[in-house]
Length: 536
Image (cartoon, rainbow, N blue to C red; front, side, top):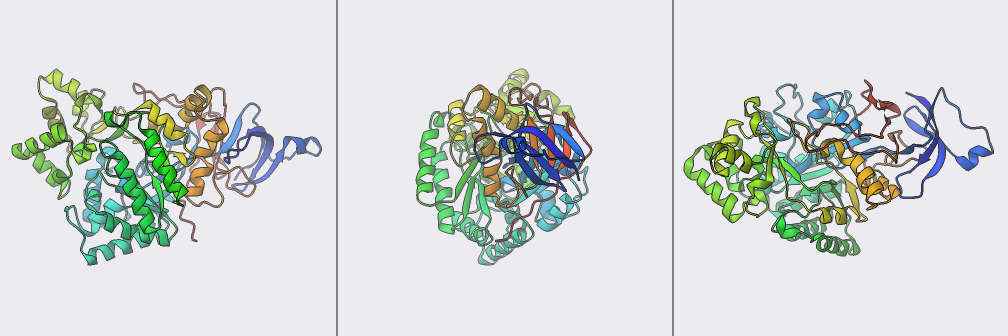
């Protein structure tokens, strides 16, 4: 471990309090001393084997990505500069109800196919775990940054019920309750759902409430990707607030957006709903990313009935002309539940990743643009692509509104999450730029948040949601997960055309007191580990 003094830093401590000048001493992975400038003037300044001159730099806690999709990337890519270079020192994975534990051999293969657009199929990895605890143990072998895990409700349902659209039997519900409890006992911090993704979306609210009661008993939280971010968005948010209240469970609204034309300018209605819930005693937080487009898989837009039975059944229906025509009508006319109840606008759906390199010409173009090049209807292009790439395509969906993004990020229970998918030729720039974009564009350039407020949204507040007793603040005795950045130059480098461009203005990042970014370059340090739920 480093024995280090960070000299003359402007400390922004993660509480929202004003910055102050100090020397900060790190030893054995923790902050052991903070000597403020006024105190240092009247006594001998602290010494260490190594000194780092932080003049002109802000020292803050490491950033916590409350919504990440690095479940396999952490294992596949030890460098993981996509997050480390942004100052992220902890990611929360297992999101949107679909991840890789708990599983059996059948479920693992099904989940790998269902979310290959998020993480790749994983055939380059030895997926040698089956339980949540075994997956966390795998992370403990050494990763670039820390990771906390949510038990994925859709994966649990696939394991117990399968991919059928039906209520769970009492015996199945009891088994799901046990699996959620086991995951929390093994270190998960809560439960996630993807209620526009199969098979999680087949669960009714009574079933979800039973699982949330288990989560509440262990002091975790529920993180739903709820049933609509489009035509029924406000109703879907209210549904989750009511569900969590009934279950007595803490609630974290994941990638909290108001998207599609039906929701332009309606963020104040969402915030009023949340304020009312908070006034009534709800334990409620949310996260968002500082961009307008969303990102998901192309298959996720399809109606839920099409995915019943699992990925192979979905491919069979896509290959059948009659079923494919029914899917098209749901997408283009009715508004599929997978597309949030809004008829799809193919000009907003941009292909960002394909699994088969032979299909690379589709990447970077909207479905409509590719269809015009081929002289065919957009649905014919989308269908062709889904079949040829076996559900592999990932998309950017250009359906957001800037005024909604800004209004939501100002809220007092807001935290930051990238929702970053790292695979593919043209990933969403949020995977590489979320945290410097908050600091540079929204805090420094636009003044939507003060610097101190912004850092609190990205550090202290998410640490409190995760119930981490020694992370998220610059405080003596806390873990030395720290970031040094230049407030005058910090900025996202990632763009839609060059989405993997690294950020600027973040020269140093420490995880557990060790430099993972030093002088702007990635070291070979793998100091990250699984961060397990803190028992009550």
